[in-house]
Amino acid sequence: MVDVEKAKILILQNASLLGTEYVSLKDSIGRILAEDIKVEEDVPARNLSAMDGFAIKLPCDDKCKIIGESRTERPFLGEISQNEAVKVSTGSVLPKGSNAVVLIEDTLVSSDVVYIKKMPLEGRNIFKMGEEYEAGSIVSYNGSKISPFDFATFCRLNKTKVKVFKKVKISLLAVGKELVSCEEEGLYKNFLTPTFEEILRRPHIEIKRNIICRNNYEIEGELKKALDDSDIIISFGNASFDSSDGLFPVVQKIFEPIFWRVKMQPGKSLMAFKKNKTYYFGLSGNVWAAVLGFYLFIRPLIFLLSGQDYKFKSFESVLGEAFNKNSKEARFLRGTLIDNKFYFKKFSQHSHSLKGFRDMTHIAMLNPGPPQDIGAKVRVFEFSLEV
Ligand SMILES: Nc1nc2c(c(=O)[nH]1)N[C@H]1C(S)=C(S)[C@@H](COP(=O)(O)OP(=O)(O)OC[C@H]3O[C@@H](n4cnc5c(N)ncnc54)[C@H](O)[C@@H]3O)O[C@H]1N2
Ligand code: MOO
Image 1 (cartoon, protein in one colour):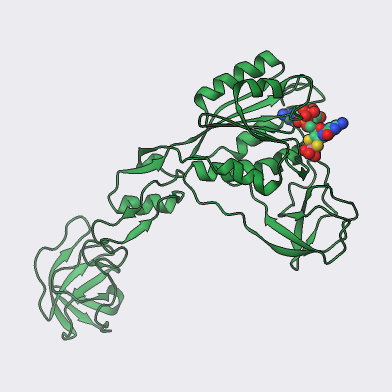
Image 2 (image 1 turned 180 degrees about the vertical axis):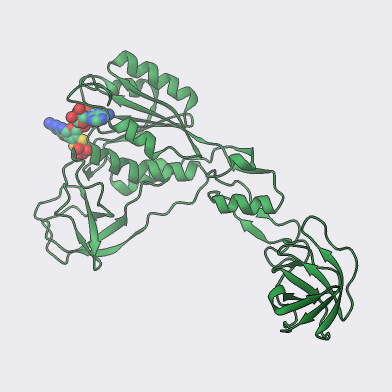
């Protein structure tokens, strides 16, 4: 049995990043960048007009001769002199020599002459070369998740492929003779693996299997298959290591222990094993214990393996309600913050209960010890299952 902090360290200390691969831009959204994205050429590469109107060269008279037109699809190639104007549209390349754009609504046009009613200041209405991104600057960093706007930026930078970390391959196993699928009639429905599959359905993760194992033979077979193709295997149920129906002995046969059982409540029944580079976690079938085990130990590992930075967002707070039990081990409560105080009584604290997940925003950790009064200091974590 290890304490919570030791358990976190034991899991992360030997974790190594997954490999990298190149993917096409359209497949990159949601993946984790494995390179810094550097701007090769100024964006925009030329001065562009930011408005519809006329490019002019200041200082000039309020009457200019129209010498041509620059369109987005067909730029004007000549150079502009004082008292000349070139018709421009939003996004079109500005002619050489121009230094301002007068808005179309501030002009009067008569055949090839434009009368300027309101003279712009120099530099106005121009989307300047390099204004968006200067050559040599970095727009996205190694380890960041590629958002739709990153995708748009990479497109604008003329990227066609980007280097990303390989997907984290995860297997989910529900273990229990009593379990039926959510579509079947029964008292003990396996809702845990489908729920976690939804939580983990992300572009940088690949779910290799989601399966119910009802006997040792199935457990062993699925664990061995998962060992071959997964980075992380998570099982739910039968996590008590001395349970008679055999998950623990099977796991012991295949993997090497990191630790089993953690000094915490709930979630004490947790196994962490490893074989080569594959991690195995045996979480409880009790939902709050399973979610907490995932939050504390597996989620940080997924961040680390996939190349992302991870930091537990925690801070000191105080109890808004008294907690009137002794705690033998670190105790985790689900709840929420109001005026920076932690409240937990309207949330079920039962390990088996689903009540409270919808509204919980924070988790408080109480150190082992006697009951705690209102105002007692507690460490509070922001709750999120985002990976
Ligand atoms: N005498 C003792 N009893 C228990 C102890 C103890 O120390 N002494 N520890 C308790 C703690 S703490 C936990 S946690 C659980 C051990 O958990 P298990 O992982 O062995 O739990 P199971 O019996 O397999 O399941 C518990 C509960 O959850 C249901 N379940 C299981 N898998 C799923 C699934 N995939 N989806 C939904 N629900 C699932 C299962 O049917 C049970 O009802 O033991 C305590 N007991
Ligand atoms: O430690 Mo158990 O995981 O409370 O239900």
